[in-house]
Length: 357
Image 1 (spheres, helix red, strand yellow):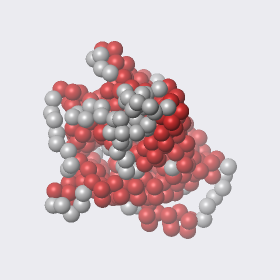
Image 2 (cartoon, rainbow, N blue to C red):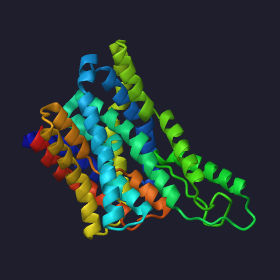
Image 3 (cartoon, helix red, strand yellow):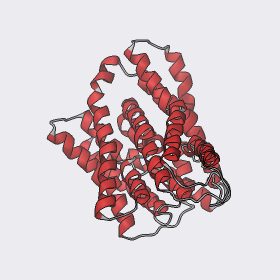
C-alpha cells in the first residue's frame, strides 16, 4: 500500500515542485502556464479521456452508472451544502458564498486527475475523469459565474442607454466565458469605463450563463467524453491504431498540467488563518469523507467507492483564483486556499488511497 501511495503521489509532488522552481528561477511565468494549460485542456486531456472511454466495454460503462451518480451528487451536493453554510451561518455575501462553494466542491480533475486517478486505477480512470469534467463544466462552474454576475454591482456611466449597456455586458461576458476555462481570462474594463460595466441585472446574468453553457458544449473536454460514451453505447469498435495515435499527446496531459500548476502556485503568497484552513479542509477531507460514508451507508463497495472517493479527494481548481480576481471576490483568500489545498493533497490523497484502494 505504501508503494502504491508513493508511486501515485511522489511524481505529482516532484512535477509540481519542478514547475514551482521553474517559475522561481524565471524560466516560466504565469503567461506560459496559461498556454500550457490551454494545450492540456483543449487537446491532451480530451484525447486521453476519449481513448480511455472508447476502450471501456459497454457492460463496464453501464456498470459505472452508480459511480457517475456518486460523483454528480458528491460535487453538486457539496456545492449546495457549502453555499448554504456560508450564506446563512457565516452570513457571507452571495458572491463570496458562491466562490467558496466552488472552491470546496470542485476537484481539479482536468488538471491533476490523469496523474492521480491514472496512477491508481490505470485505464479505469477514464470514466471518473470524464464524468467529473462534464459535471463540473455544466453545473457548478456556470452556476458560480451566474451568481457572481448577479452579485456584481457596477454603475453605468451617465448617458448610456439600457440596451447598449446590456449589449456590452453580453459581449464582455461571452469573451470571458470563452477564455476562462483555458486560464486566459481577460481583464474587464474599470468601473465606468464603458457601457459594458452596467448595473448587474437578471438579463445580464442570464445572458452570461447561457453564453457560458454554449461555450462549454463546444469545449473538447466536454464533447470528447460524450462522443466516447456514445461510441461505446452504440457498440462501435475503433481500430487500435486510432487510440494508439491519440495517446502520444494524451500521455502528456498529467505531467504538463502539474508543471503548469506549479508555475501558477509560485505566483501567490499564502495567507494562513482559519478561513484558509477551513475551506482547504472542506475540499480535501470533508467532501471525500462524506462521499465515502454515504456510499458505505448505501451498501456500495469496491471500485465504485474507491474511484468516487479518490475523485473527490483531488484538490481545488485553479479557475477559483481566476474568477476571484476577475470579479474582485475574496482576492486575499482564493490563492491561499488553492495553494494550501494543493500542497496538502499528497497527504490527504495518500490517506484516502490507503483507506479505499
